[in-house]
Image (cartoon, rainbow, N blue to C red; front, side):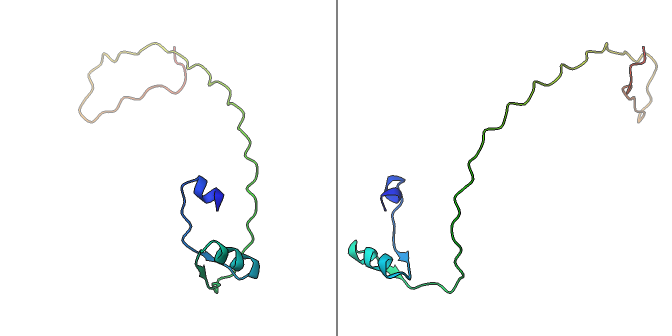
Length: 87
């Protein structure tokens, strides 16, 4: 209950089937809901989160000189950049 209150949560009721839990809820005037028909699964602690190692700095991009197209380009014609160094 302290943990919930510490984080600003208000407990409205609990769902319990163990006698100890029901007695503790009644002692603090907390309503007890009947057990659900759903299958319960035990909570597992979350694995410890490791900080990822910093990634290596990316390689500097290659600077290539600008190519100027001096020939006429017709409407709809496409001009592609070269894949490999061609000069």
